[in-house]
Length: 271
Image 1 (tube, rainbow, N blue to C red):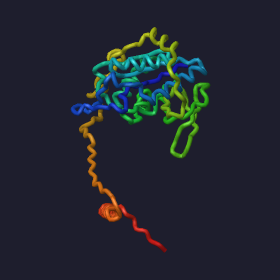
Image 2 (cartoon, rainbow, N blue to C red):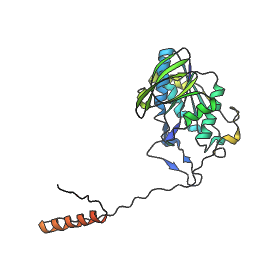
Image 3 (cartoon, rainbow, N blue to C red):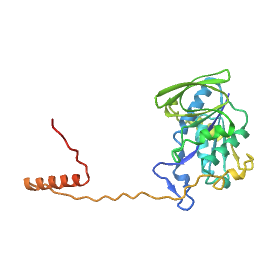
Image 4 (cartoon, rainbow, N blue to C red):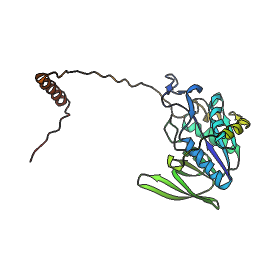
């Protein structure tokens, strides 16, 4: 059994910066981490590896600094890592990103399952996983909270839906996007870190995956961020010091006037 897990390097949520000219995210190695929601996808794959002896391949598209998250995945137990890096990939939207990842998956070769996180914490679109499935014409199950059975060319999964849970049977090969309920991510071990240091990370560019240049990067992206505005919060306040009975009454009157001017007082009818 071969499982492929696309992962992504994202900025720390407290340090997200945008380029006001291109509308794309500024990615700095100093403040980037493995997308937290991809950890659940990786753990789901590693759990299947423990149960079925599967091979787990991780793949990411990103700048040279993205090697860091591939090493982290290898130290957790992944068997193979592929790094897609090329200036031509820069600025790609979810359409272009899912296309590049699908081309890489085709080059990786035969597989049974692709598992992705529900979404990335930077874009927050949840479109790349389904996009990959569309490019590769794979069966798709989203928001998977449990994998109950894998056998005889199919799997039984539980999906999180608005009304509760849905049990589905999916033919393999397939792509799953998973939610946090799927597993508790393991931590890298010292032995795993040592093993990761000896692993080769394969590096592929656009030519290596035979990518159509009209479908990659900023030029191949049908969606664009056309304007960025930083919200400005202005707070002004009136402070009343209620020292003594008279001042307290005045402060209460001012508060009532303030609330009435903004229609924030509800009428109470006593029957």
